[in-house]
Image (cartoon, rainbow, N blue to C red; front, side, top):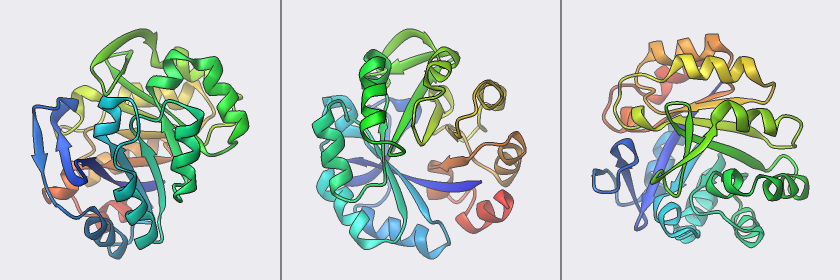
Length: 237
């Protein structure tokens, strides 16, 4: 199981939003490259990057910062936030990002998302961000009528790299991940499931490993010292 530190970018610096709310921001480090380097030195080999400005604006906004990260560290990088067109996907992949995460564009134009997955096989990740069982879009500001299981089911057989499931109500709260819904996803589809939102302690990582997830994304808990990368990696093994 991968342990995947998260870097959320807003205005080119590292921040965290509490439950995805833009007026509840915690600022950590000005230099995301330095932060990525710290995660690498601690043993992480994969990084989850979110362009918060992009998620809100509907287009990638922090590509210079992302490019700097990709060029500085030898880590697999996935990027989400505002990737809505084929041109956006190409731009993201051309700067060296390994996986482009599509959430809003995938949910609202699923047939198009399937076409893009065929065009970029193994390079796209379906981002399912949810409050309860229902998916949220537009930087988590809009609630959709579709459920995470419904969308995951539709993605079965599509050449995507993985599904990232984020429980918005737990994101940044450091109260543990939603194990019940994560288990449902793992049992529902054969696609790799990556869990985000609330992963805080070594025990959370162990529980997710036991569920059979492909990866655990950890954000605020790393920045505030609730868990460190080395301990998380050991738990994942």
